[in-house]
Length: 236
Ligand code: XBP
Ligand code: MG
Image (cartoon, rainbow, N blue to C red; front, side):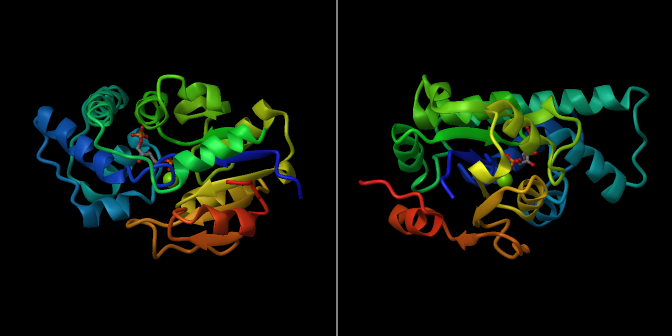
């Protein structure tokens, strides 16, 4: 198989972002006079649902049965999420969230060798921009042939929609691409789109089920191993 494109998940894969998301959610709740606090153990459970707005709704449905929803519940959730995004992007701009080991080098080397790069994520576009502007520089978009984020598709991961969107945007078949993911939801999404998928685990996902993945790595600190296993062989 000649790999023509690498499709990257963002949260947990390009960077360990979930605790910053969690803290940003909590700041938004406090600012809106809600005594909700998502600690690490609870957030672990809430990660079952992808997408920030969807996650807030899942929390209300599953953990707050007594909560009286405001008349404009969708507007309420949208507002909380907007405030959360503000806090999260401020943390990114402060440079608190570095790219994971090997990621910058992989992006540079793959791009230089003519492999197309793409993003398939459930997170919001401003979060992707904020992370990669700091991690790759102002011209970060020039590395990517396709950027699929957030609400651009009707169903978020584990549905395959975002991967289908990216494949269509790239004009490539699933067999031309590999995906890099960190979670069971992400893996189910990419596999449902028939894309060979490699996993890098993190604190929140290390015990998840990765059946069907082509390989599972702690991280990409040793890129030579990754290149050998994937068949992506670049001269360093
Ligand atoms: C991870 C997610 C996101 C983030 C929060 O997506 O599920 O919902 O936790 O981001 P991925 P938003 O791993 O596919 O990048 O609040 O912007 O949804
Ligand atoms: Mg992820």
